[in-house]
Amino acid sequence: MYRIIILYLLVLCLGCKNQITPSDIDLLNGYWNIEYITHKNETFYPKGATKLLDFYEVNKREGIRKKVQPQLDNKFLVTEDLNNFKIIFKDKYCYLSFQTVLDQWQEKIVELNENKLVLEHQDKRYNYKRFYSDY
Image (tube, rainbow, N blue to C red; front, side):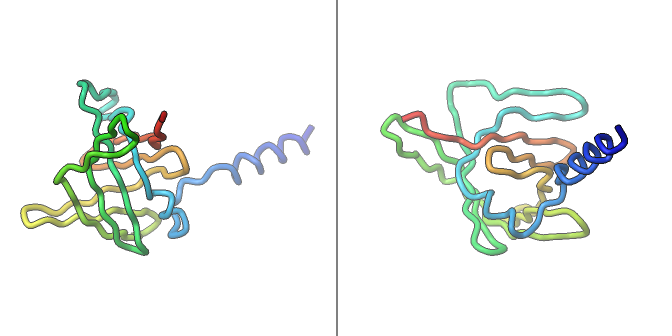
């Protein structure tokens, strides 16, 4: 019985991975769709017909984020909204550091895997799922 409990605890500990590492950053590349946003124990779901995605492209410790809209011909309409960012590892956390002419801010990567991305900014958590085209 003790062996089963120890084995269970070992698997549980090894399976839990909260820290983002430099090798995880390539998983950020691609198209992401906001599923929902949480703020102060409330959940908000995007409304409206316009479905914009966030496109991330990372090269080493720098990257870009663009807003794109999927089209029926399996192409994307790219908006003029473009943000450059740097990837910063501070303490045991990973941040996307944005800077524009008017503002600068950081978004903490809370979770990142092949299909899920969670970013935290100003007490809000943006929960994304990877976008796969249906066409």
